[in-house]
Image (cartoon, rainbow, N blue to C red):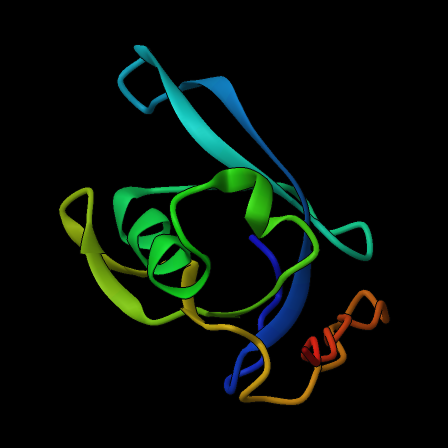
Length: 114
């Protein structure tokens, strides 16, 4: 999991694809996966994070590319226990980019002016 500071991490979406992902029970399912800026590992999207991306940037996944997101790690009930989960909680414009232990800087997208 990405080392996310307490107040979140701002990254830019580089790409969005559908990939066949193996679950903990060994079955596979097609899931949305977003590639992130600055060499961070791709993020497999669950329904919560897909809903947030649609809320922020619309339902066309091509429109997500180049957009910034704020990732946080709240504790959630998953697989029978409380554990941190990656959650997209903002557009990234609300918070400054944070440094992470890998010493890579997260990008902060500038708002587009019309």
